[in-house]
Image 1 (spheres, helix red, strand yellow):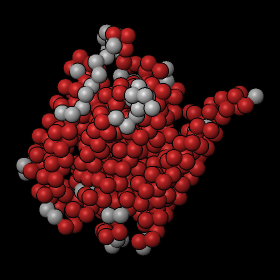
Image 2 (tube, rainbow, N blue to C red):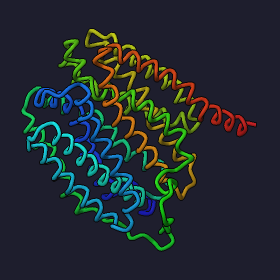
Image 3 (cartoon, rainbow, N blue to C red):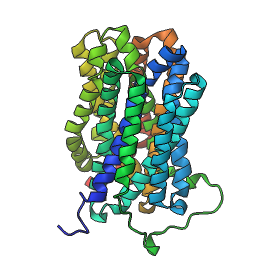
Image 4 (cartoon, helix red, strand yellow):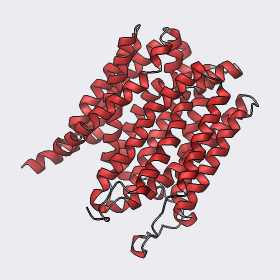
Length: 397
């Protein structure tokens, strides 16, 4: 295989590893932050939700800012700035000045992740051979998928066996390892033909790809529903006395994605997105409903598998749809649009749900979210599903 078509280069592996470490920190902290805020600062449920979710709001803003500025700053320089600020923000968790300061730190930490992860994603898209773009981006995104399991698993395990100071120090250490490995990344200089002149002035289309918005709206809704699992599973596990089992929830969730994604990816290519999305809605719904009335380890872990098969595969499918619908020269912006809506759902979800949970309880909120997922099937059909079906029918004729 020629060097021009080689995918697993040193730079690709290093950037995927950096993305993995940074995303592990994000998911590690997101499952412990709510409980930490309640135990350490006597925060309310809505405050605990905000402490969890404000990080993702920061990430969203970081993406918006750096997406416009990365070319003028420089890709590798942006990567270094992002990781250094990420480490500094992580160390601020060790300073205890109350829940207000914790919210500020979470917000700043989110901005730094948005900067660093946008830089890694942009550089990876640049170094992947043109003939293997889809495959390469798919493998790169698996680094984040692995982190969605390993991060929460480490977070829940460490919260049961160590102090928060050790947890924060461990997160800072992962940031330092990322910084050291970043020195070995070689970023190719862009050819003049590849440089795109940015439009002057403020235009929404400079930040958002309009053609990706409909499917991104579906992503926003299902991400909001999943945020209820991500942010409050720890509280729910305490309530139903399954804390030990809950630490394995995200592990089985991720294994379900890793095992199924090669098949679902192929299914989408051959049969179209609807063959992945509609079963995904059903599996996600069943998983949420099962979670709502679980009282033993088996059903808790089974709900994790079903939610992984549902939400996990829908997430990658909607990202592929967003890119597919957009012009080639705006593929990066389409990806950014997808993640902005995903971040918004995961970020605002815990805060909004934090107001409802005191009224409904965890069990009922998971049942409600299950029905929201099911109802969003209709929205998907009207925004994309019927168009997908029509385009496949026209190709068949």
